[in-house]
Image: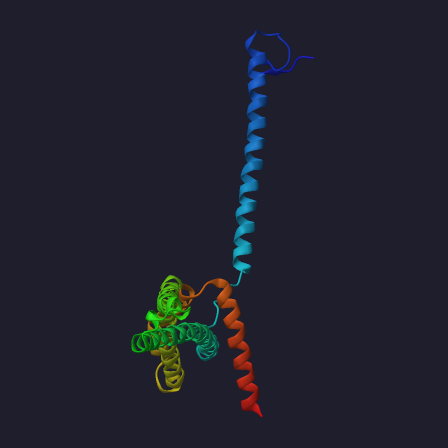
Length: 239
């Protein structure tokens, strides 16, 4: 079966060698055209689908309730400040204990040296003479050891860091309370400006100071104590 196309043949070799090649090219062209149309329609469908989905998406910005947010952050800051004070109190107890021991041993050493000199205990011929010589040396050594231990543990430095962090918390709490009191007496834009500028700046500084002053394990321990203390205070006030 021969089919003539412009003097050529689509299938077969009759009518010259160029007719078959022209028929193949025509078939390929038609196939590519169909594939191109399908891809074009698919792209159009994807764009239409994305457009419809975009039109149906509703974006809602989070609403900031300034008073509630300040109240939440104020409660958090008070709890963390109390935790700092609990940690400072424990360090103060340890530091005072060591200092009392140092004071007592120093006074006893001075007293023993005075008694030894007045009674000439080192001139005795019994066992008291060597004790009178060794005792002041022993007490002085113990005092030096305790003092070195205090410097090694850096208890005063840690107490100073906790005090500074507590002061930052107090300053932040003061600014939060001041802003909460002024919410009804100034424009909303001004309140938001103070909140984003001063209050949040002090709040971040206080959190950074807290994180630097205590390790995570200690923070967890003292924050739990502070939370329980606040709950007990609230229950007592409610009675």
